[in-house]
Length: 279
Image (cartoon, rainbow, N blue to C red):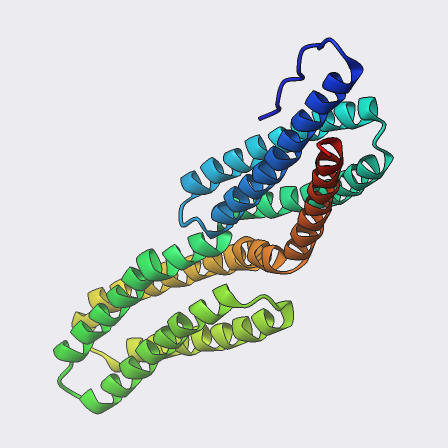
């Protein structure tokens, strides 16, 4: 929080000393609030629910506003003290902080979308349930088939394997950050989906009419699974969690270090002023 300015004292020297004390306190609080903003933003990026991401993003914004308030108050003090070197260091921080805040806003906007997390939940929840229902229906088809059982089992096993292959490709797609690599994964998914549908078509001609109910259930489960997989790909393509984490670990970390360097240099400069004032 910003430190209030000292009331006017009886001598110019006492006033200057009090302003220097207030400036030191503000510089220290400025670093604290900047650290709070960074920590809250990092928690927003790592949060595992939309709700917690939004909460932490709000905390980051509050701390950011406190940084701006402290900086403005400190600038007023340094101007009144005519500390040109410290003002230069504060200018340097403000410039770096403006870059930091612009990047941080982008990071937080991405983080609260949580598209990779939502894609992961689809994969481990509804998509897996649909894949399991697909296999259960085909297991029933195999159990009901007496004639030509080996062919039916081979077709069903190939169809199930194709769906399971798509499942195994979902996690790498969600984690991938390269568009070309995601496109290659999607190509494999499309090929596997085609195999699953082809096997169902062939099963329809290789099974008895009594198995049509189970085949219809398998077809419906496959449709549901592939629809969910399309939704998953759309979310994964947004890549908001991956992108926000990459920005946090890369460009933002360098800007954070630069801002902290400016603030520590400012604190050191003020500390030397304080040492001189007490001699």
